[in-house]
Length: 285
Image 1 (tube, rainbow, N blue to C red):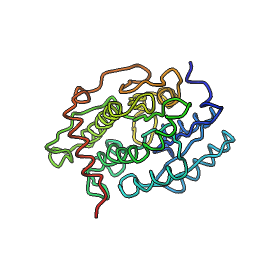
Image 2: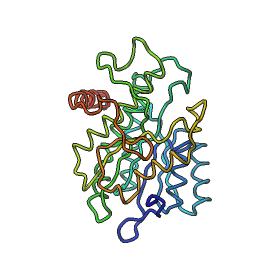
Image 3: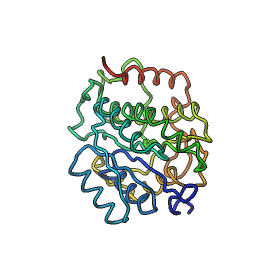
Image 4: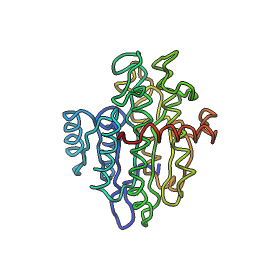
């Protein structure tokens, strides 16, 4: 497959790839994979010890330098700081993989939890964090995509589990369940990808979303079905496969294009979600 090729841009420049939630599971395996192909991988994590161990492991396996960035995505101030640090260090960012996420039942069990900013935790980490992170990194993505390297790419690691957003109770203060919170936040990521795709010139930046594989062996999955290798292959394909350069506004189930929940195609719903995100993510005075 074309996706197995090494990561190279124009003039043999290695693409710079930021992967959030890269100290465990899919993110960690994807970072290994892309570094092994010659990408300049930037690893994000929350725990400093896990972050350091991941960086050293990838360096030893790939022989490449690996960037590391620590931030807790449950706090929007840290999200903004993360974006600013990455942009300062890397004026050209070729790929952003929004992978970090909180599962239906872990950490902390299935009960409703809130982020540092007072937002429902799964919505905050899985969706809200990626919204300002992506938009604050757009100049770096545009710089990369405007060169001869081809379009920069934003990849949302979502899920086949999707629940339509209840705009009357987005924070799920009524009838809460961890699964409902998780699946609502994952659909929100797809709405965000489609919104970006309509906003941005696909010759400069593309945006796609995917369900990488079903129940991979990660810390948020109690009973695995698929392998990490399947999820890595599907995600890496959207991130670096030259055959998908310019492909935007699409959702994939593994390597096959699929249709998400109908709300993803609803422009009014996307506009409401965007307005809500901009309100909730605005820096507090």
